[in-house]
Length: 190
Image 1 (cartoon, rainbow, N blue to C red):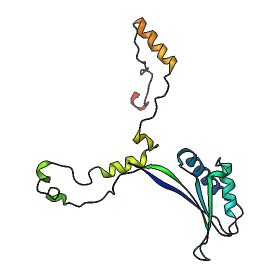
Image 2 (image 1 turned 120 degrees about the horizontal axis):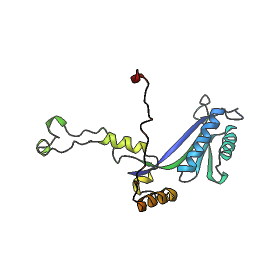
Image 3 (image 1 turned 90 degrees about the horizontal axis):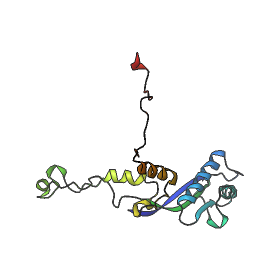
């Protein structure tokens, strides 16, 4: 099923830090690129009160192509003086997921599924295929592909014309690959 989920990036920017490390800049760039591709709505930014890192994060987001109008910021107070202040970034994106939690076993598999007819009807057990479905959902590049297919790509007109001409002439329209020249290894030749 499709659901909206949050994507977060926590940056440990100290109270006295004037800028970001090179790794943090790369993390912000990657985060902004994913937002441009998959984001639904603005980027939320929570920065600790009194930290100078929020300005650096804002400028890193701007250099990564995020408009200032798409950044909603808010200040917070860390829980204690010893707690490091994190600049927290987040946005909402569409995710594919399984509709229920995996790993639930309400019935005993040893007795045929917990009912009188489970063993005789050869039904699948409660979570049959749940882990596979969850792994597939985690690997889907664009969750909207689950809801509807993508539009077809335009045809390759040059190849289409070649095939039509071969067909009109009565020739072979398949693509020929030379396999005689292909050598996997020289070990078997000796």
